[in-house]
Each structure stands twice: as structure tokens, then as C-alpha cells.
Image 1 (cartoon, one colour):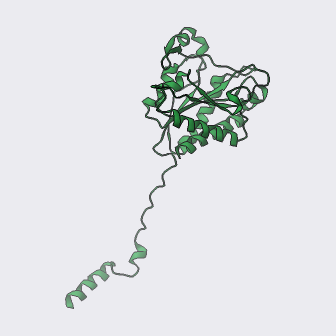
Image 2 (cartoon, one colour; image 1 turned 60 degrees about the vertical axis):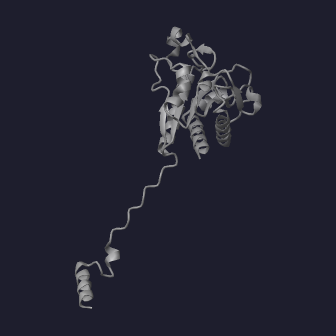
Image 3 (cartoon, one colour; image 1 turned 30 degrees about the vertical axis):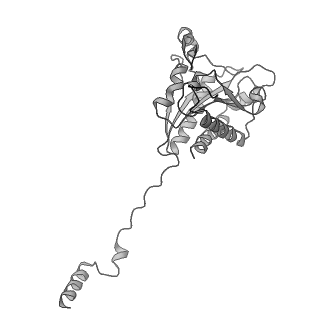
Length: 256
């Protein structure tokens, strides 16, 4: 009993046995909640480069495209008022990048500028960009340039099932395409009325940007830049923000 009493006295003197000790103790620091896309890697491919038209020999040379060869790149299209597809794709992509990074994703782009004194990169490099980054997915951003009367709206392009090129990514790419179409529709954006069978979903085997990918991938034509209504949306900050919200939501939806 004497030993027990001595130990109690020591504890009381040190404050450790005091009833108020638990109140004075520092609370445990809560662990930081993980961001929704933390640890995920996304590659965004803003189609073309603003200066491609200044380098015809370079962009016209043939490069691998998945069992065949195609031109390295093209100049892209523009609105009737001269607003370039390259600039549209770049600005939308940067908005998507910012949104995904706020969600915790690491985002890599296939080009780092939108300049008249730059060209490329070629479709083979863009196609393999997701592979090199060990990405979870890759999205290629474009605008279309159809002259068909009344042609307007977006469509999403996914790879076909081609052994040995895209067999391994065909199914997840299709799911990414469906998620992308759903998020664009959810924001009131019209589905293309001139291509892809009217349902906004197209499968193609002729695009090196898709064929050379080893990660789920889609290419999205966000609208027809030759259509006045689409062009108005594509050239306005509010319109580009709408596209970006949809694409970022599609990525998050696909990655769960």
C-alpha cells in the first residue's frame, strides 16, 4: 500500500493522473483528406499547334499511325471569322488542366505553348504521350470544320478494336467516350447532326492519336467551328468554360 500511495503521489505531482489531463492534452491531428483524383495521371492533347501552317514540310512528312503512315500533323481549322482551332483547343485544355489539378490529378500536355513559331508535335508522339507518362487516360481536344449546311454539335471519337493496336484499350476507351458524351450532353451542348450517326459517338481506325495509345483514350470534336452558333460558343470565355467543366467531369466520372 505504501508503494502504491507513493506512485499515486508522483503521478499527481506530475499532473498525469489529474482528471483534467485528458482535456489539456493536444488533440490528435486529423489526417488530410485525399483529393478525389490524387495519384491519378491525365494527359491532355490540345490538337494542332498555332504555327503548323508555317512549317508545311515538317507537318506533311509521314509518321507511324498504327500499322500505316500519315502526315505528321495538319493546320487545323478555324471559325469563319478566323479564330484558330489551335487556340480554341489550347484555351479549353488549360481550363481542363486547372480543374483536374484542383482535384489532385497530375496533368501533362502534349504541347506547352500556342505560338506561331512552333509546330507539332506529330501524331505519333501525341498518340504515345499517355504511354510515356504512365497515364490513367488521354483526351485529345479539337474543333471540327465541316462546311455542310447546318452542321453543328459535338462528337466523341474512340478507337476501334484492332489487334494488336487498340484491342487492349478498346473497352475502357469506349466507356470514356460514353462518359464524355454524357457530361457534354448534361451541360446542354448539342450532339453533332452531321456525323457519327447522330448519336455523338464515333469509332475510327484511321487516327494515329488513338491507335498508338496504350491507355484509354478519346478524341473530342467539341463543335463545328464553321457553324455560327457553335463558333459563338467556342470563341466566348463562358462557352469554353462550359466545355472545360464537361471534360473535367468526364475524367472524374471515368476514374471514379
